[in-house]
Amino acid sequence: MPVNHIKIKTKHFFSEARLLLGLAPDATSHTEKIISGIGAIVGILFTLKISLSQFDPNSALLLVGSMGATAVLVFGLPHGALSQPWNVFAGHILSAIIGIIAQQYIQHPFLASAIAVGAAICAMHYCRCLHPPGGATALFCVMGGEQIHQLGFSFIISPLLLNLTGLMLIAFAFNFCFYWRRYPAHLNFTAKSSAPSSYQLSQEDFMAALRQQNSYIDVSSEELAEIFSKAMAHAQQNRPQKRLSITLNHCYSNAGLGEYWSVRQVIEIRRTQLKYKVVAGSEAGTTGETYIKNFKKWAKHEVHTVDRHWMKLSAKSK
Image 1 (cartoon, rainbow, N blue to C red):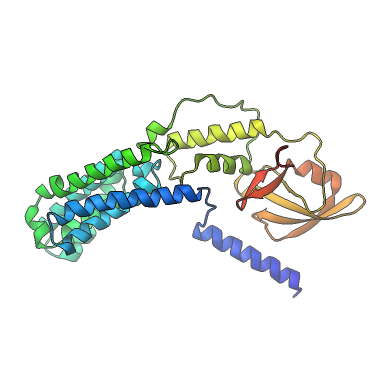
Image 2: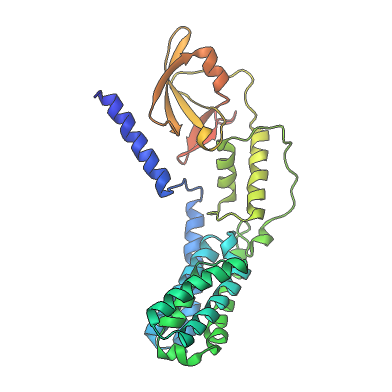
């Protein structure tokens, strides 16, 4: 088997493995990542203080486990649909109620734990308050120990509601310090005029919008509309060139979306034909040959990489 064929097969394998694992490109900056971590530190210090004031260290740490998961969402994904106040409050409280009932009426702890988590997920779905850490709260109410069991439903008021209120207030105040990550997410969105729909969106436009959004996105309807608006604006500002020149070793995109998107690098130019290599997209690693006139019809714009993301090559970049 030729060496080039082995390389192509290997690249295709790793490309498919990346897609199966869900290893998507990360459009957030280093600043955004650090801010998320600092916010979580502040929030967890508060919940630890509250929990340790009421429980022994072992029980307190179990409770803080679910609060830690909530901190990941409200500080790491402040605009995410699962991170919003209704999801946080209702998700935890509803799960706690179900967990307490399961502990009181189901004698076998393992069965009670499983039913509590399953029922909590189902209830959160119906109440439109799905919040993953709620499952941990339901489990904690069953397996948290005698000190937790003795509290019964008063556990919901203190420490659960107290912890949640403090965490939400910290999330609001902390995220408010950064104009691009207001919390709740609704505060981050304002009405903006959309670009004319005549401009075609491409994979590069969406990546440019994600870089501007600078938030790891668990998409809500408002956030998706904001991304779409920014992508449309980017498409308007970076219209395809009417006369696209084909240059050796330069890269070009077909402006497709999803599995139809592809980036090709010109690796050889002859008199009327050229040879290219697919450097991004579903056929990455493969090579091909075509007439130059056909390649010009396929290519919509020239692209380059910015922080390992493919972006349109604007006039300023040239």
